[in-house]
Amino acid sequence: MNKLNVALVGCGYVTIGHFKAWRRIPQTNIVAVSDLNENLAKSVAMDWRVPHYYKTLSELVKGERVDVVDICTPPQAHTALAIEAMTAGINVLIEKPMAMTVNDAEKIVESKKTSGVKAGVIHNWLFDLPVLKAREIIKRGELGEVLNAEIEALNTKEDTMAANEHHWSHQLPGGRFSEMLAHPIYLLRDFLQGEVKCKHIEVSKAGGYPWMKSDELCATFKVGRKLGRAYASFISSRDAIYVSLYCTRGILKLDIINSTLNVFPARMTSRLSRGYDSLRQASQLLKWTAINAGKVASKNWYSGHDMCIKLFAESLLANRTPPVTVEDGLEVTRTLEYMCKRIEEGESV
View: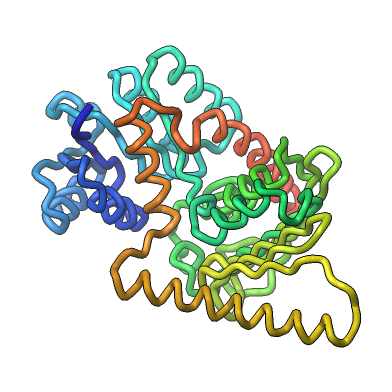
């Protein structure tokens, strides 16, 4: 397979990042888009200079030779679209969350096995540079074993989905949280290496949007014998994604949005060691600032979305396993479905 013909299904806001990512891969060609809102599909096709647009995936499959269907619709539609594409012998890439229920996720996995095509999921935070570097450090054993992971996902009240009263996310079990909780779940699963079980979850409402039943969330998890925590907010003073990894011989602090990683090795508590530690932290931030400035200046900045899609395309071209499989998506859905049910119960009290 020398060139991949790609079709994007769903033409909402998230599709912009997908267009940019596919366009950066020389071996791919976007041949069509589709959306139930045909006027939107037409407009997006014109804006991105895509030759063809369709209202439905069925019409698209009949009219095009497609190697990949990239599903960017709301998650309620993922299962039917993924199965339809795979049944037609087409590889699929699915936005997160892959599915909202374990039953739907299992259907996707079974269809992938039956059809023999490749199927992947967008778990983009796994491919942001600080996360990739942290995984390298952990793999080399420099800081020992990861014992605990904490993820903070902060959004302001201007968040595109939260601020829109009519956005589809508010109709899902768990509301706006249901769309984003896959992120901390798959990070915990990756860093703590196991099945993520939510042990406790609390939601609260402090913001003013009447259509949001809750806008803050705290959850604790167990992954085998290890512990994890997640905090999510849609009333933050700034957008931020922080990851803290507590290891047997040190600590890793990741700032995903600002693309920095600080390594805190084990140290004594003397005044001299504290002073050296401060210098070490400052030098690490300077190093990352230089790296990021260079990437921006050279136009070589790859987001987690870019890298996830790039690696998926490479897996098709080289006939390898996708970077994130639908089996991975199923395991994330197990935790997600449970959490969304608990959120709904908490909100109804």
